[in-house]
Every structure is written in structure tokens, then in C-alpha cells.
Image 1 (cartoon, rainbow, N blue to C red):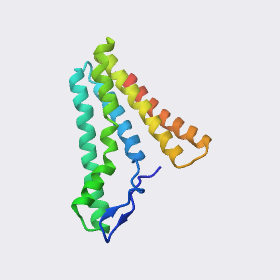
Image 2: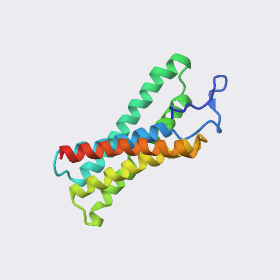
Image 3: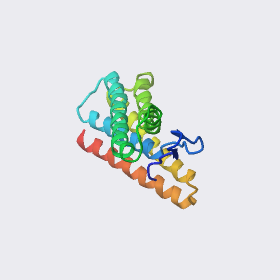
Image 4: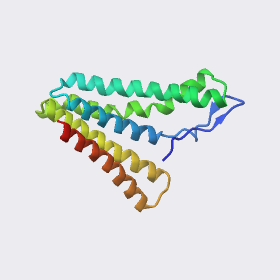
Length: 173
């Protein structure tokens, strides 16, 4: 499940539409990041829901920017001349990191409507992030055409990673 880089035509500076794919690695990473943010914030005690939503979204944006910068400097500058279109493409490629922060942030935001306090909101956000992580990992393996048993293995491994974060949150809270 490595990071996918679209095929780039150095002569035109364009990326083929067929080569544009979801960055599953970025989505899985962003989900794991969101779960970590919720777990970390939850260890600080009661956390205002709005602050947790902003922390989730803000962290997703900061890590997205860090990944964009790393790709532009570490990958693009070494192999290709930098162009506006190339920069926009890298920004789009890494966007799933931010997108992965949205469902847990929405879950935390709507948690008062479900009668949940700060702790309940954090657990809901963590559960959504973990479920999203398993979903993205499984979707990546399915998209790669892997056999069913590998889909189950990918889901189980990502579930285990999510459960480790849940256990850390529970132990540190």
C-alpha cells in the first residue's frame, strides 16, 4: 500500500486523468493521525468540543502541508522542474490527509446532539477515525485487486493499530 504518484508527462507538465487515484496511504495515515489527535487530547482531561474539532482539522491541514512540502522538496525538485500545475497536483495528491480528519471532526461536532459530553465526544471521534482507517485500508487492497484474504488481513492490521490507540487512550485517561 505505498503512496501512489500519478504518471507525469515531463514534456507537457500534465498528469493523465487515468493516473489520478485516491491516495489511500494518505487517507489511512490521516485517519490514524486523527485518532492520535483525539486520543492525545483526551488524555488532557475534559476538552471543549469546539477546540477538539479545530484541533482535528488544524492538525490535518498542518500535516497535509508538511507532506506537500516534503514531496515538493524531496521528490519533485530532485526529478522534475517545479511548476504551478505540479504544485497543485501534489497538493491534490496529499489532500486525503485533510479529508480523513473531517469525519472524526464532524462526529465530535455533532456529539452534543447525541447527548454526549467531552469524553463521549472524544470516544465517538476516536471510533470514527479507527473505522475510517480500517475502511480506507480495506478499500486500497480491494482497489489493488488483492484476494479476499488480504483484504481481511489489511483490515485486521489497521483495526489492531486503531485498537492500540484506543488502549493507549484508555490507559492514559
